[in-house]
Amino acid sequence: MSASETASTGPGILLVLDGWGRAPAADDNALALAHTPVLDELVTRFPSTLADASGEAVGLLAGTVGNSEIGHMVIGAGRPLPYDSLLVQRAIDNGTLRTHPRLSAVLDRTAAAGRALHLIGLCSDGQIHAHVEHLGDLLTAAATHQVKRVFIHAITDGRDVADHTAPAYLARVAELADRAGTGRLATLIGRGYAMDKAGNLDLTEQAVALVADGRGMPADSLDQAVAASGRGDEWVPASVLTTAGSTAIADGDAVVWFNFRSDRIQQFADRLYEHLVATGRSVDMLSLAQYDTRAAIPALVERADASGGLADELAAAGLRSVRIAEAEKFEHVTYYINGRDTSVRAVEEHVRITGEGKPDYIARPQMNLDRVTAAVLQAAGRADVDLVVANLANIDVVAHTGHLAATITACEATDAAVGRILDAARDNGRWVLAVGDHGNAEKMTKRAPDGTARPYGGHTTNPVPLVIVPAQESQPVPSLPEQATLADVAPTVLRLLGHKPGSAMTGRPLL
Ligand SMILES: O=C(O)[C@H](O)COP(=O)(O)O
Ligand SMILES: [Mn+2]
Ligand SMILES: [Mn+2]
Image (tube, rainbow, N blue to C red; front, side, top):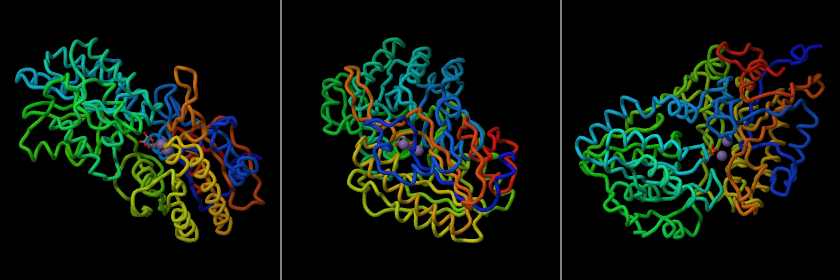
């Protein structure tokens, strides 16, 4: 009996457990420490495997941690997609970034007018939003085009990399500037302010005032600026380095953003753009990769085509899907899973769950999971819905705090929610495919250079569990292949729905 002969088809639920990675039990593995009877039973009782969710398997550089964008994009596309970070690295390696006609034109204009170039971005090597080494190539280009005044507006990390590492990355920025022969650190601000994506404009405005107008705390040294944060690198207050002189953006200057990922920089980019326009400053503005901004900011590296994925196949087959997540991951089950496509197909419904007030992930690791679960149960009970796609955000979002106890609670809350969803699926004759999008909570510390384990809230390169719960428990359950990747999810979902994988998909159905 082949696997496909045993897989009966019908409506189902695709459940993404965000940040659900697999690693051996350890005292920093929140998932292993948590009491999760449902998740434990899932992987022992039903066909399951571990799927690659990082590095080349999903379209990242080898050894790079996975992230929610590429994770959901690959889950939807059914194939690895060369991610923006990889495309930027290729453009650096083959020389097309520093010689890009758009960049060259801006640098020539800036140099000829005796204007300044402002480079803004996250300075770390987390490779989720940015890579500090990309800055090096832009500095080289600026030097080649003889731009004399180059200001670096550094955003400090402490989230995608271990906290309290900002000084090391800023030292690297200084080295890159020395190597290129141009560029100096001008301002500094934590990503908590500069990379807010939840519409907290009070935070964003501090970054805008800093970069545009040179308004921030004067700091005589980098160490002084970093030390002024009582909450680690993410919250370094807006600081102007007194050694840099006047760093404000003037009419005719150029701005290049060097984050490659849009989601957490676009709010700042839009507000800075609008502020400069409102104050009569006309600047050339470019971004390393394409941003989803209101402002039209030309990019130096184009996005990979992600069409022909699950959303297109569902639409072609007339299969109705309901997408459910809370605000933090809503775009992931809609925009990203649909291949960064903003169109909402006629057979698609989107449910965005929002909470009240500012979330406090440590005090309330449950977030709005009860309401997300209720929405999933409601959609699962509808006969006209073929596929429910839901993201349970807690494991990842809470793990980002680096707070082990809160993350354990998040894992336990998720476990209970999955239990309720499985019951509803069984009652409604639905199969469930549960999968992580990248690892996070299974590794909550990182070793510092001095050998000590420090709290770490970032993602990992660990594989993610992938489980298929058949619609009827009595159904024969074939085992899944040992090797799998996130690219296999969409073909498998289509197979479970009774359809063939899309022709653009290179992943394979696991059943
Ligand atoms: O933006 C963030 O919160 C982190 O840097 C990455 O997390 P995500 O890929 O899960 O969004
Ligand atoms: Mn994620
Ligand atoms: Mn995350």
